[in-house]
Length: 439
Image (cartoon, rainbow, N blue to C red):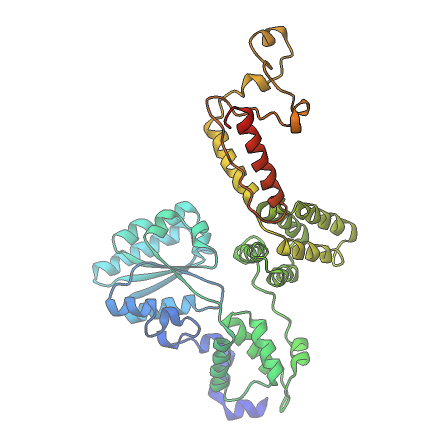
């Protein structure tokens, strides 16, 4: 390593002082990698700057995608003072100091761009404290969050700020970062082609992580050494996927799994199921979601779907992990390939709405039991026809409250087992009309 420091002493000194990711921070917006929809020549932020109409913003995206860097560059592009605070370490007292400093600058003719990292960690009252200084122009707020703003930020705050989405970096964007790092270091990464691809996958869309991994590789490599994929994995611990069981990664993947099952795509469904297993998701949570898919998206189009989903849970209880995970995979494929129907789901929602609207109505007296003499005398049970004594075991009576009238909630489609149910309902409707004198 001594020869390297002798050949490139200024770079070596910089490397000791600053991480590679800090040294490679872009100096201009158009140098930002992977967010061209925001910072490119026709990007949303570029247009705002050209129009001179930069308002308060919320940057929403995964870690390592450039949110802090872009906020700094925006302040430079618009000649605003840049203030940065973190919701993790800041409280009301610090916010007041920042607001007061911004007011003084404004009185002197300069606006402040206030960058708030992890803004979702402020409570509702703290978020509300930004509203007056946003409204009177004391600050242009730029908040950064990795969480869905719709769930984590006040509606009042969201109504005063535009949400801009930052994307995870694709492999080609991460590769550009590695090339910049190699140019800055004056040496190539000591990785073969396969190992380089593995490093990009390890970064998982996080530019900072890619540069940190590159630094670790350079530190570990001896003169003339080139690592293959296996050696890389020994040197650099595999970085965990961006997946928090209580946050967006969790909800995004379960949403993708549910939609793949609903869309009758067993391959995509298996992929997302395995993604969640690999990320450490609780298998019983996945089992519960499969049961929900069986009743919401299949219903009685295939009555076995619910049986299979429940059986998978029982099999997992019996086998444990990892053997029991195969039972969930089997259920997942069964559900994805089953005929689909949300007719029961839709009927349930409609019936629930009707129950809330007409919850005070009594059932018709003829279908009520009459356990006392008084109840018999007042008509309870009078005129009830026992269906099993009738032709076709069907009386055709009305069972809805009289004031409500007959309603139809369940409309089975002509698919799967519900095709047979539709035939029965049509037949019973015909009998009902005949026996009620409707022809």
